[in-house]
Image (cartoon, rainbow, N blue to C red):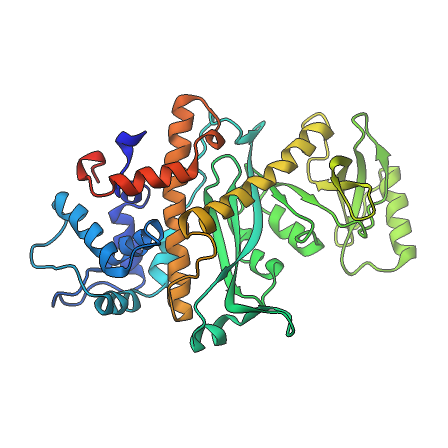
Length: 406
């Protein structure tokens, strides 16, 4: 795998022509030379910031310029800029080209033979959120706010990020971000239009709601979401695998008499008002090694659009749901292995914070794609390839332009 690795990993998953297109659409092309960094170099610099989180701006610029010079992609009239020049170049670029670039290149990378990436014909995907610490500047406080309560607030402004990732590869394919006053469900609504028909999208109980369920499944994707214990899901028919047919009521259907009539109609097989209820299937099980405060094993109740038990049994769906934790593994790769444990982002303004996070997402995506491609070639699960080891190899070989031609 080391033969594929250098900073070319970044250009391999984020090609120069796509970078140029994103820059042009955003209207951020270079208007004059004057020694300024070209926008495409700044984009790769933002990605390199994630790859070399321990290095300062000038050291990252030296690494990048030496590699680009080795490829013949560095103009002799340019010189590695100072930290102030880089800050100005990042501000000129802005967040929009990097956001558009991420949305253009970030697609699922698992192939048909990639182990652990599929349930039948459905690609296993997951959605969840996490938070990131930003520098404690006046601008970031105003733009994002602090997390926690008034009494136990966070020491730094918090950025909430909700992402959709591929369980098999950990590649993040969609993201939305805001301050902590914006909930995960609100951010998720920005992502539903990107859900694809061949996905089985897995989500925790925080996301299950009538409107979000309809929006996420509107394009034909299958859903497998955990329900809260308080959510009413009447048993209409127990199936052979132990799962049962049920209906999920709309958020506006609160009248108990109406719910009872809808339940009776659904139990008889009569059509029900789709504005008030929708047919679902429920899988319930306990996990003995997950004990709650009362000492009882934790119960999981999953709601799915896959109403035919022959298409996916209750056991298979229960196993698939626990692939959701691969999303948390991907979050850990982003926040710990790339950025470093407990490390605060660099940027002092909200736009630059967002630009920096998209740089992390792009770099993580490139590394995840590399790992997935190598694992698929070797016919092993990508989980067996150590992410941190891959990052270390990339960092060691980054100045070797012969390792990976752009």
